[in-house]
Image (cartoon, rainbow, N blue to C red; front, side, top):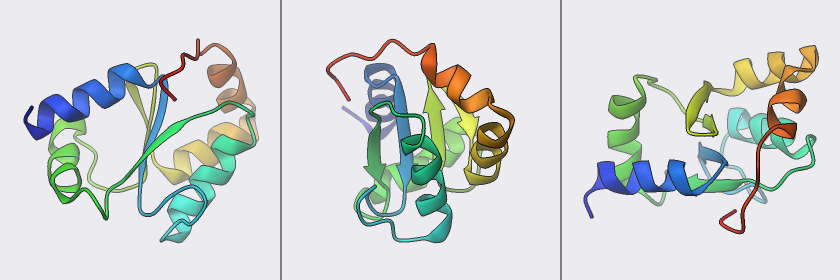
Length: 108
């Protein structure tokens, strides 16, 4: 499986996924930490990929998503955005509403 196929599989297999620096328990940048906090506050499980340990994904995902920075939050197979967008959506109540409509599977 090449890197692009791996990315597509991760996105399709996980209703909520964040591509971030570090892990939810130990984020390696402030933006990743804030995004994880916003997602966690919605009360649903989510998957993550540490791009610092997956350099192939770190290189290829921005090309695939047409989004140059990390973190990247994907919900139901669609790129939602990065930290600032997620924080704004949380403040407006839109993130919780979007996440409440996600059907979670055992893949997370």
